[in-house]
Image (cartoon, rainbow, N blue to C red; front, side, top):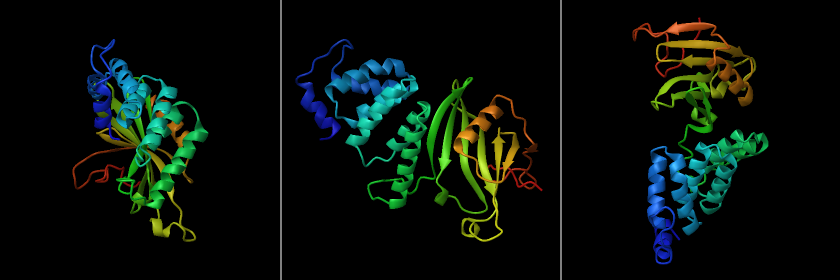
Length: 267
């Protein structure tokens, strides 16, 4: 049964309580507050709606979102697991669970969900609408000073050519909601078809774009793990690690940054 039908069945037997609105009104008010990022204010309304409609996926999704934003990670995971049970066709819940387990320090569960996400993408399930076209997924959100960091992991089959972005850490100013800069792990080397040929190697490096300059940092012979990369990114953001080079953006003919935003290859 869909969510609107559940509402209609329940309205006749549920009256307004402490929030002063019907369960349907509480749901509408709750999601409106979530959209405004007023998560604390949204919780009482969403909790009221959840009591009336415990099997409504959209209520559980918004409760998970609000709980995560308020730092209630265990509650967020529980809501998203219930959502997954009710809407198993929606692959978007897997990145949410990945983020929850990451925030909770449960690496084993985090990696299990990542494997499940990649497996669903490999199987090309018809029900996974949009998954095959997705280039990346958000695997973590965390705060640092006045910024919110969104860590994206790229699906390898989505990447082509000699430049491959493996991870991108987008730095957003919480006050303005705008992206200030980004830090990425990129590689330059053989194409996907050439990777397995003898003598072909791929170089990895960390790059930072701040809108005016393209900074290059540590280089690697092998791809670093996400956890070590995350540590390196935090060191960069707090100023502990200094860049190796800085390539200024110039005119189109002589710019030091590729059109896709990556630093030009070092020469």
